[in-house]
Amino acid sequence: MGGAATKAYAVTSGVNVVITGGNRGIGKACVEQCFSKLDAASTIVLGARSVKAGEAAKAELEERLGTADRAKIVVQAVDVSDAASVDALGAYVASDLGGKLDSLVLNGGINNMAASGMAARKVMDTNYVGNKALCLAMVPFLEKSASGRIVVLASKVAQLSSSMVNGMVSDEIKGRFLAADLTVARLDALVEDFLAADAAGESEARGFNPSAYAVSKCAVAHLARVVARDHAGLRCASVFPGIVRTDMKPPAEWGMMPLYLIKCVVAVSPLEGADSPAWVALQELPPGAPPAWNGGIVEGRAHVARRGGGWSWGWRGRTYSLVFRLVFGLVLGLVLCLVFGLVLGLVLGLRLVFGLGLVLRLVTVLGLVLDLVLGLVFGLVTVLGLVLGLVLGLVLGLVLGLVLGLVLGLRLVFGLGLVHPSEIVRPSSTTSNHFSKVNY
Image (cartoon, rainbow, N blue to C red; front, side, top):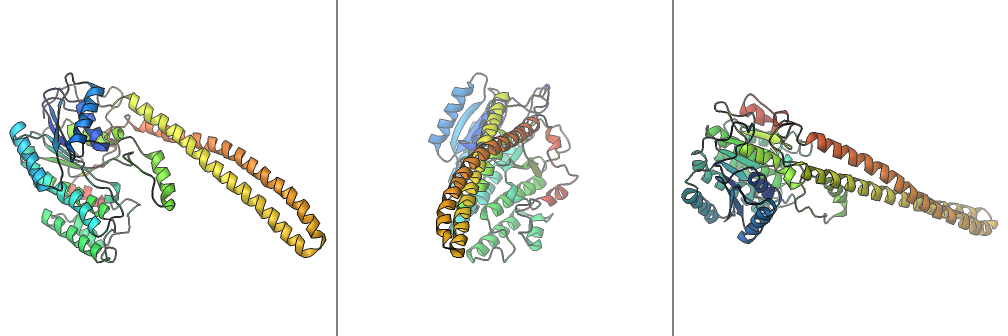
């Protein structure tokens, strides 16, 4: 992949890229990132299960960004769980792209954390089996590139060191995933062992994370490690983009609502989430030793937009993201504190009314009269509590929301684009040591 010498971090000319799941979310944002950087000598294959949805995404990008001196976007029907679809994509690359592919971004997948039984099989068939088939089918084309690379969209739930999943997996299962001599066949066996355990309702008893999604993401992340080891000319990385606002819907269970609200605040835009995968896909790599991320992890948003740098999707998008977080933080803090204040005032007021009234009624006959008087008094207290709760909610909501919004906003401003990827990517001297931090 050749690029101009002035572009320190990205190649821009004569690049062939395949991006699956490219019609929405992070996939579409990856297409946009590449489309905004690659010239007319390049081709971006937007893979989507629905050609109609893919064409709509293409039309929207071309209308918004223009087509002058831009890469050509070609929509292809790609369903990683369909072998015929994978074969058709290979035939297209062989015939229309000269058999050379520079970057493959494996973004297609199913996000279903609670899947079990047949649903678990479907998640695994798409997230691991399908992506594996597509990845291996594209390897011969990638090897014809001077610097072919594979980008796997993984997840934090695929990492053992993550506090979300730490301790959920047995040492025996960890050892099988982390083995230095891991092969694709052994990965397949691990996946089948999980599915058998899930079908028997014994996934946890047999040492697995009970989430089919987590296991599938772990498997495809380790697939990237195996491919990087077995194909010395390729560069492969698993990217954890963080929490991204992609079709997030309120949970069906109220108990999950706090987590959903937190996600709404901390989630980044799809364009931000696409920074790392697009950077890995287009980064200018010097000849010789592979980069630190080869066969390992890129976590977070690997911006290369330092002062004077050339890899930025612009302050317009970041400003939008910052304003969204400020407003959402203010509203969320206001609502939460308002509800808390109202409930507290109501509970205290009613507790005082009925609590004292009951005691006085039991002590003396005059308690009946006093009960009425105190009822009126504490009724007023209840109303006062509601009013105070409202005021308290407004004040605390404003303060909390402002602080939360500013903290998140400032963190994003100084964390997006002003940090070099080498400070985010976890370096390692060897692939095996690097991936000792990765599992599910």
